Length: 263
Image (cartoon, rainbow, N blue to C red; front, side):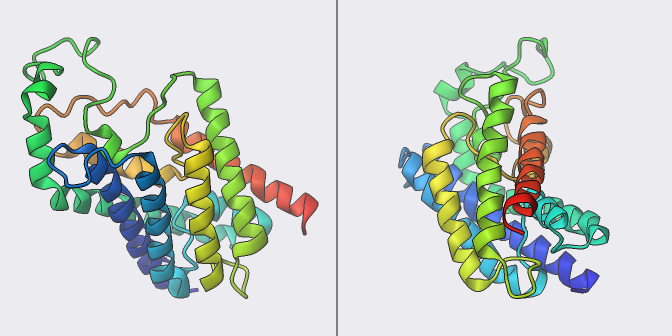
């Protein structure tokens, strides 16, 4: 794969992944959305279809990693050259940020209606910048549209959850999902991976919201921090390292386990 193939495939594929994944979170979260309160099952399947769509778009170009944990696992397993890893990661982060901006564009009216709803306004500081930030909320009322957060804030448990969930994903990819060249997802592998993501969401997603992808969380969190949204609250940067470190550890663990048990 050329550098341009990696950049184009990973940027576009990850942008589509976040557009559709963040889109289902917005659809379920925002009050003026027709899908408001559709529930966790809708989110789990929405993210599965998001993975499927992004992967099918990019699999023939870049191998559809769309996730630094996948790239790291493949580098350890030997399918991806280490020299390509930085370009994969940078492209994925850029794509994730683009996807988050597109979610904002699609749900612009709903985001503003939600954040100016009296019930939401009363729960937030009256004027951003005019309050003691130590008392400001760690996570704003629409941060869940963009990024993940724990139900119980325990750093060790949260990291362990992300490590285990991501290791399941990467092991499934390494054992069942690779293309003939072994450097990314194949057409059948994309479908298998999407179904695994749905399963992870339903089974292991409850504690942390299953980031299982560092850029899926970090890119949209950066966008949330930058967007001019009224009453948006904090971006919870104190938690932001967990959905980055946990999935990377899970990807590395899966790559090592594959080499020990399956290679």
